[in-house]
Length: 218
Length: 218
DNA sequence: ACTAAAAGTGAGTGATTACTCACTTTTAAA
DNA sequence: TTTAAAAGTGAGTAATCACTCACTTTTAGT
Image 1 (cartoon, rainbow over the protein chains, first blue to last red):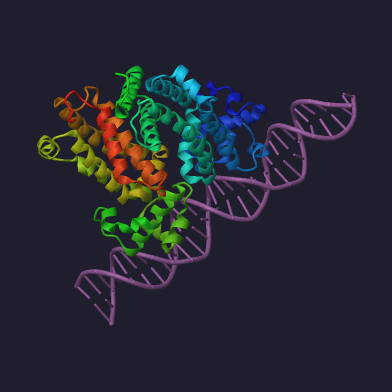
Image 2: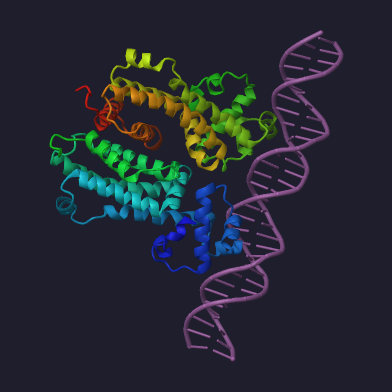
């Protein structure tokens, strides 16, 4: 179970969990990711966790609460790197060129995905069917991440490094290229023989050239 | 029901269907797209279609067969525009520049998506959970579409219009940009106020600049 | 008009499901 | 050591599910 690589407190944001509860979480993550929430029974989760079915309901009022308990933290954690104080100062010091920022972001998102692969899978697979998930997503990522990203885009446009188009277009193109790569790499064809260094470089170059402003570094 | 815009013979590749069968298909498409296959009961489909539940099993041996009957034709139709005889001749005559090809492809894929929105949604949502769908996808799209696409990439690389990188990287970046746009436009934020012409142009420009070869048209 | 095949029906079936709850075991505090 | 709270159990429940099948209705061919 790949999520055993994760410390349990990372999963649940430091909450104190019983051993049985941990087993329930781990088993639910595995089954939800593999079969989907709807096709996974609480009975199966219990068996896999080696607990009584009633134990699940001892900790989570409903099956849906179990799903939310798994997925909500991953959304919170997705946002974290974007919550930077004094963004402008950080960009000027550490990411003078948009290439530096891009490379860092791609690597950071990659690390995040590798660490949270199963839970991200669950999130992506379940969002179409659960309004609560969609609302949470909008709140955390739609708003918080996007607002920060807009500032970043404006910053680099002011320096002539990114073409003058709406920030949401930049957002869309950058994210689709990055996640197009990460999803293909880790979710669609994980067993293929990937040259990660080369593909990362190509993806960054693609984005840089695609969005090049008048002042871009050659 | 948006799929009512589709002629029924387009949906089912010309097969003769009874009126009740058509209603079953239409209702199943709607519910599978909205709730997912697993969370949709045959009882619900029957009620929505105004038929007896047994009627579904009169036409489809299992619930899964109903799903496959809906999804398989859309995959076949996805491939169709890529099955061109004498590809080189067509490219030279109609798409001298990669920009022309790109624009045509984006528009063609857009039209396809608009026409098949619900069934594409079902396909995307269900693939992770159904090995048969994944196999069908690999057969139709993984192989057929990709092989053709490789020829197209090689064609434009030979003319210096696309950068010399592996075809699968080109494929990945092009498709993620195109589908990043189409999915955002029609599946994630369909109600937003989109300037389609501008966004199409931006997407094409992004890809063109991102993949520009030494001989690209200025 | 008659007949057989095709299409459709809806009650029923055995299995499965999310959840409850009375009871048992474990843990922690005094 | 005792007591109470917390954690855990598993049989049971009402509801739901995919599917069957005896029967009815409709259609098509002669």
